[in-house]
Length: 187
Image 1 (spheres, rainbow, N blue to C red):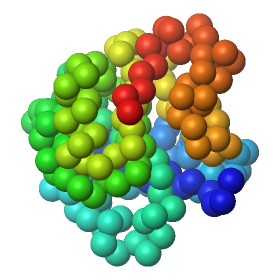
Image 2 (cartoon, one colour):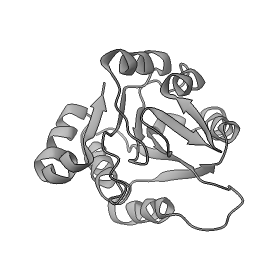
Image 3 (cartoon, rainbow, N blue to C red):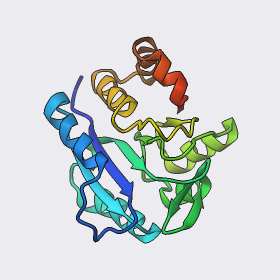
Image 4 (cartoon, rainbow, N blue to C red):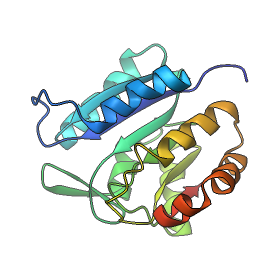
């Protein structure tokens, strides 16, 4: 492997001025310590905050090319995210990210269902330039993907650039959990 793959994590929270540490922050800190995968964490509570955080990453972070995983922890309905009680479709998110995600893997935690048709996933990939989009088809909120399968996915992807092989390994090692949360990869 030529270089490390860093994670840029953007989490939707009710109030960005809150000082409470979320589960995501704890898990990302643990991932750095146990797996050696570096990340940047940002929180947002509006679509403007979402855009601003991505803008800072894209235009001010000189290491942007190293962030291969864009990790989005966003609640919502199937194929929509919810920020500040407003819903945004995957098409709207694709247009916000237009052409800026070249070669990136955009991964959604299981706070929302990702259930794209072939046409919808291809549109998202074409518009954003992303290499792949992944997430979960189950709304089983009792099990957080943040502390379970997301960690496995990031670790396996750190070791292997072939996303199909990564998914195969995930299903081999954690079949029951992959099926239960309905892990999905669109590429």
